Image 1 (cartoon, helix red, strand yellow):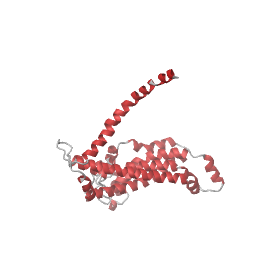
Image 2: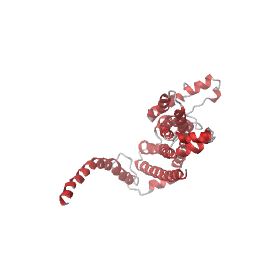
Image 3: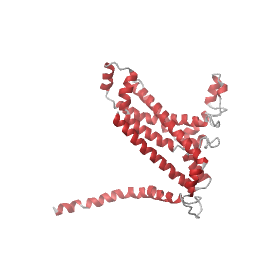
Image 4: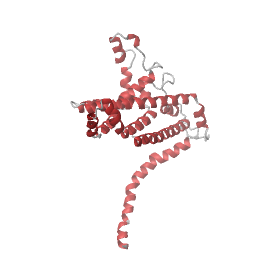
Length: 298
């Protein structure tokens, strides 16, 4: 018995050696930066000089009282709510279309998913060209169909800049969530839908009472992912509007970038980053609790 234990013991050391590389990388790129950020958020560091002055909670007090931060928080919240709703509605609709189509279904799936493969920067430049006031396709189409009065500087008009970002983001992201919904749809037993049809249920009734409840798991994943991605949206805003016109499209992630690297206020930007992290954490925990409870009820 003693010999058997000795033979097994060396494997524990081998396991530690296998874990060590991942642990080193995680420590270097996650734990240490997190600890460092917590410290820098309490300083007035500019990100360049070696002069780091400790100022306590002053950065967080400024966040609490800053109208610019309040505006960015409102824009972030607006984007998050609208994007979660629109992305999931469009993604579910696309998934149902692809699931029902029997002819060239793989082609449709590829077309709907194609925007997901683009980087946010490339997508932003595409939409900047499409929405250009002078030669953009959108305004040229309005001219073509006799609706010249509807032409706008879509990215320069405070009333339409945020709408343009929302629509372009839905166009890019819906295909990703479509794949998740499609997997959920294809996992629904056909027997249940056939039984509902035999009982006289119409298309809407089958969707409401069979399909929708059985998609609860996929919907939980999609809503959580879309909320997190919306809260940290950056690429589209950086390319399409630069936070403008004025501060109309400035979000928390973008103001972190502008303050930390544009205004050389690394300490304040780091404090904002910690606030954003806490917001995402709280929202995610609430979402998981609410949506998991909904799954149980269904």
